[in-house]
Length: 170
Image (cartoon, rainbow, N blue to C red; front, side):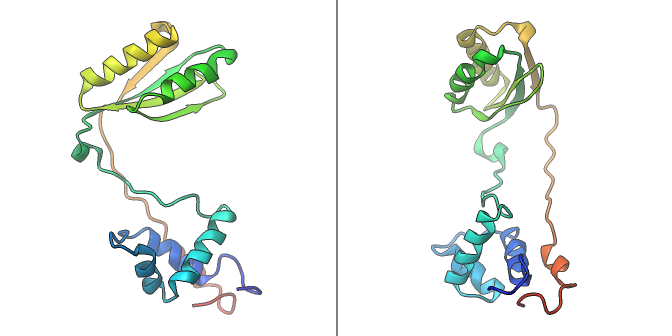
């Protein structure tokens, strides 16, 4: 692989293949390797290289939450003094209903998502978090999901590599 541009055509084909339906078989990477015309070992080496270079951040499923019994969600923003952010983030992250929890450089510095089977469950969790953290209603933004939009975004990487004749593998 030395002497070739990075990422090369094979890398781009791998990135394309990872965006398709991930095979639910005992050896999914073997099947993806076959789709891209390389060995499973070479695929795994390339995936590590792409990850180490920051090109690939991870491979994860996109779940249809409603089919899993999740019928309600809200995005919550909290205003907190800087010295309490870590403490409150730890409390928030302890709830299995919280799927994201991150800090922002903003008046509302802690943001998180609560998901549950219905609005009542989500409201109960938010009320409990507010009580445990001593957060007042004036320091909370509750932004419930009004409409779910599912957007299937795929990037055609292999098309990018077509202009690189002589700079990689097929």
